[in-house]
Image (cartoon, rainbow over all chains, first blue to last red; front, side, top):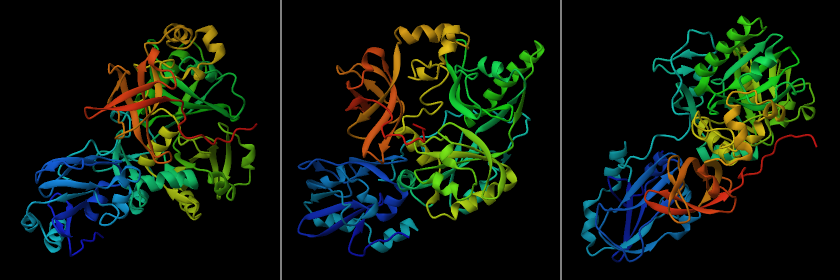
Length: 127
Length: 405
């Protein structure tokens, strides 16, 4: 059974976005996505300092059964990436909302988050 | 991120080769999807097996455990695989050894009673038609197990040759075994099995075979072999009692069901070829680094199909050779180009996956002969990116066969 924390916003491409730290937001993929992908074996992330636009392809997730592109759910500059995933990509499966986060972005405008889904709307999308 | 398609669902399996039914009796039926089913099909579904098309068969790719969990469980404990889709053939008759040697590269005559070997069916051009296990049983027949994806081809090959031999006055005839086939693989596989058999399994070395009762099911052929690099057995069991045997084996908490996904990554870590990917009709045994399968007497006599092509390759040069690769970056997958240190394409990956045990990307592929030395640093092109790949001796993970010292 997938879980969708109430304090996160969600994209239709199954990413979550966590605010609450000034203009910096943290991004990951949902429990639902991690389960659908299966065992994740390789994660390619954007580089720190890179400017990304919402909807840009900015990395990829490879599981034992497929490769999926990662799309930026919001626009901004990448300020951090989760380097620990290089050695332990399976963390995305085991702790998708915690240690399995992917990268952080400094957004110019937090209003971009409002365009994303809340937990209830995302739960409906995946139902 | 899920909107982008990846590749095909799973990279296992020969490039679909299984033609329609040949009208021959065998241990399978067909489902509404047109896929053939093993006698355990309903059981797989009950157990939560995710079923996929493998060479025309509906087979479980994994069950409740994920691919990686199942892989690691096999290396730590043991797993039970349904491999009933493989072709089991019995070869009877006075001339059975002569018959088999007319089709394969191995020395079948030298096999001791109940001893088996990996061998290869080859064609006149030296290409590999299939790989198979031949056991010379003490029950006056050869027991042959070959690939599901080659069932029709193998049967036609053997049947054609048997007819020819009979026409020349020879004594040979073939029978398809109606049995199901299970593989119990892993370090505790034999310990689990021992609780259900009276024979001392310590005396059944790697690549030997015996008929015994297993957990009360009489007449099972137990062969100490497998496709994982682990100790373990394959059990040929009458269809009517296979479900009962599976349920009894699963009572032991060490035993978990495993499917095609784990089978593929386990065999790759063990450096074993998948027919249709790593070897096929265009690769010779020498190119495939399977020279050890060519019987010494057979090389001298040059009396197996394709020998005039294959034998000179042993001492000469081959254009390409199968090698093991360990790479960094994204996992390598079949058909990705292999590049020389200068960036020139020199071959293609034929199998690849992240190794669950080594936590590194492993794979195999063919490269030009001069570039095949262990220790060479080549590269694999992964989605336009060049990733370093070290030519590595196989197996990648040490095998644990029960060989008598």
